[in-house]
Length: 120
Image (cartoon, rainbow, N blue to C red):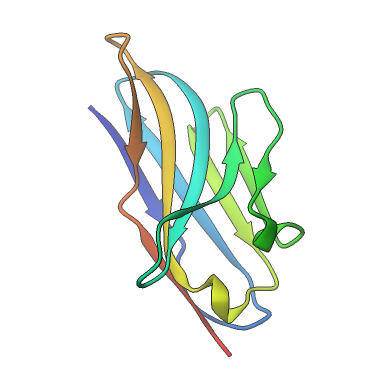
């Protein structure tokens, strides 16, 4: 079994910062891309930041220059550093990882979601 566990959400004032973490554990052979998505009420889930294995991160236009995605391969953890937060960043944030397990099967896994609320 593979699990993704998120932490780091909360309430912050506009202009503030938060750092989200997502740790993958279980029967992991390899991890390909690791991403962060978000979903605001009545909106579709959208890709915020994408970090391909061995590649260059890319970002949704609305967060470029403010958010930074990073990975720690040693601990199978992906982070999202969010600076200069705006009220429109308010959403539930989900991590996603494409993981190949020890049986050789590849699938997409999701974290449980963490609420980020930015007050004006």
